[in-house]
Structure formats: structure tokens, C-alpha cells
Length: 145
Image 1 (tube, rainbow, N blue to C red):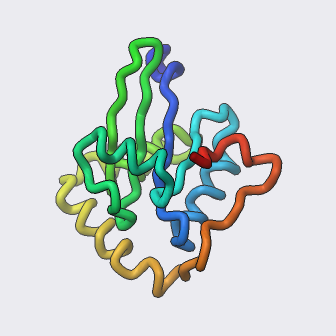
Image 2 (cartoon, helix red, strand yellow):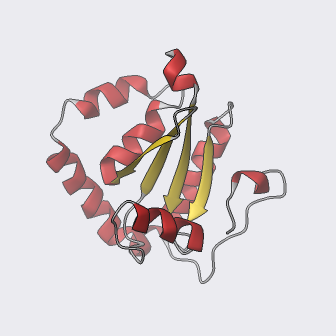
Image 3 (spheres, rainbow, N blue to C red):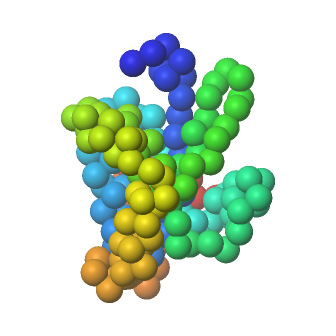
């Protein structure tokens, strides 16, 4: 991992009511030993402000986003759909070979697959009535604003 990558932090913006999104969060928490990922529900004001700042719909809860922050320059990049998923997996050990394979595919194709899953996510993975609360040991990784 390059030194530049060591200064990156990531915020996953997810649909707090989506069963698949909440499973993804647990998957990342279990494997993110360096604590590089934080999480914010798309239903939060915090996420809405980020989306608007990046000229996206502040009400879109149908897409997973990853805000990649690079310090100390303070630059940030907002990734969505399959690019967001690839960015997450690229930071977790054991997934880099899969990431290399996916990156050779056209984004239009990987986003098509993403959209197919996203369209059916509630039916397949369920939907919560309210955003589940993180455990007390994980609470500091979730942005509640």
C-alpha cells in the first residue's frame, strides 16, 4: 500500500433501511482493522449535505456512495455504485485479486449488475422500518448527524 493511500479515509453512505447495506457495513467492520471506514446513513443530514455538495440528489437512497477523503490536502472524491463497492473491497485484505478482475470490466457493465441487485435489494435482503443502531463498540464509526 502506498504512503498516499495510508492517508485516505472513507465514509460509506448507505441506505440505512436496506438489509443488504447493513450487511455490507458489518462485513466492512469485521475486516477494517485499521479503522479507515466510517459510515453515514443516506437518510441523515450529513449524507444529504455531501450529496448536494457533489451535485447529486440529496434524496437518493437507491445508490451506495463512498466519500474518499485524502489528507492533508483535504481533497475528496465521491464514488457511486460499482465504483464505490470496488473502492471498499480494494481497502480490505483478501479482495484485491477480485478488484483487479472487476476493474478490467467496463463500468457500464458493472453498474448494470449493481443496478440489477439494487433494484431487488429490499425483496431479497429485507427492509428495516428504522435504521438499525450499531453496537456500542462500533458506534464511534457511525456519523449520526
